[in-house]
Image (cartoon, rainbow, N blue to C red; front, side, top):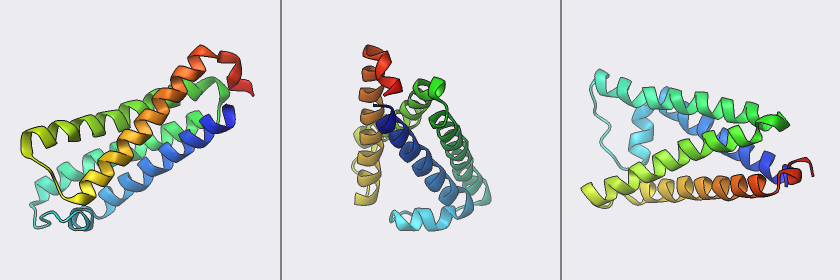
Length: 134
């Protein structure tokens, strides 16, 4: 169980760092890759970069938690906040704004899968605390 948890946390961590870095370094390309308008003001570009920075920080914290046995649950909790927050906010957006391009639907699916895997793993760790050491 511990190996799976560490692997899941590493996956969660580096996906967040990768996406966050892409957003911070080149938000125009990120928008274009999703079929969205990329001619934006400096203020809006800054607003796009800010959550990218938060994704990088959260990803690095999740990676740190994956390296310490006593922090695995905290890492899962952070991953659930990140991916559950993004995925649920996107679902609300679908209801309010309609369906976005396919790339956003795929991103939402990935976010909700990572959230779900983290949630199930957290439940298993809480129900079987000795499994953390195996």
